[in-house]
Length: 332
Image (tube, rainbow, N blue to C red; front, side, top):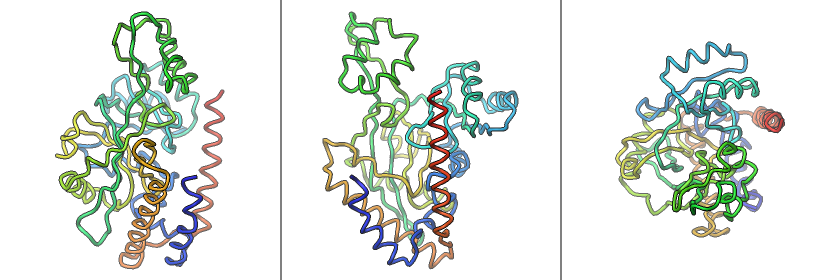
């Protein structure tokens, strides 16, 4: 519903660029410019140290004991976050509370896994930024604030009852009841707020809120400086955690959880109360136009080759097979 009506515009841009995979030249430092097949761990290495969370890559054939040693050496403590090196939409992202729990996770999922420090900042947002390679200044075109799923205690109902009584939480009850299985019979105090998820994704119950009113010259200047410190990244969404948004504006005290490339979405469009369907379609086209201009500049003026359409399609087929396999294992 969001993309099919825009396909004619996508075909128009491809014809104009004279290449069906023109968008593959947008972010030269990321595999296929970030089509979902790239290593998130390798992309994280592009981030300036002050914004980068402590992370360790556990490959599918790594020795577990070596991984645990690397975690200690990096100074990562429990709880921590484990997530697939290739993945999206919150697939298999989990908050891990102990070494035993992490061992079970790594033994179950025989794929490359990022083990990352748990960033305890209370807020999370997604900021979409794009900049033409020939220009010093770019544009922030979307800010999405993330509201984590919570319930409020009444001093009477158990946590399980609160989840099942909440209109939004009950939609995610299978997931939430599993996450909080050890606390379901506890009774939260009156007015006690219980955060049910720490993963900022729709699939985990997080609500996306249009935060475009926060776009300012100040924060664009901060992201211009950030962009120039991340070589070969010109288009995409940065997901970050922070305590106060003024610190993000000033470029201080926040951590970048991940950088997304060409498959990024201006996720503010999913705020149904502050965005209409037709403005969402227009926003997608506007972003695709910027993607075309960035890719064209990189290709024609900076000799960045377009990836062959055959290779690009092959990667997407492999990604689909990989995702299907991971989802199958997650159900076991």
